Image 1 (cartoon, one colour):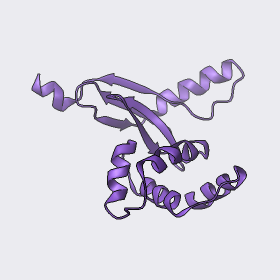
Image 2: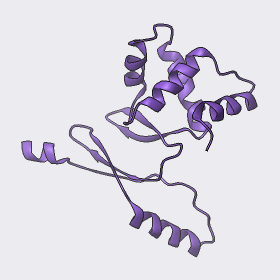
Image 3: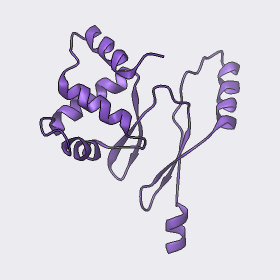
Image 4: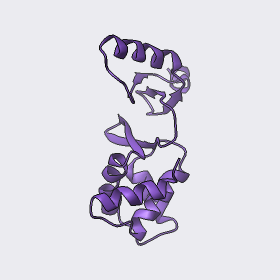
Length: 144
């Protein structure tokens, strides 16, 4: 598997774009973050060490990273889009708390097998899926 930087650089080249220093900083920040993130959180993280990366550059880079297959917009929670890096990671289920917005990742091998079975029935090759369940996490349940 190629490094994310090589994948992104090759993708950008097909679009007539370059891997600029701000894009590289964003890419590195995305792949050092091992949790779901939104643009505001990514901006705050990057600004701790790099003052030359604007929020607008992050907003413009996110769709490029998605199109390159490196990240995906995984959920929309509390009026914000959350992303995660998916390159090299298996599919999983998101459990989203409607109260606090916590996003929990869960293994979903059984669900994946069911999707494959349904896809086979329709002569369809599934390559990825998005699945989330909304409810209330244990911490918020205890507070009620």
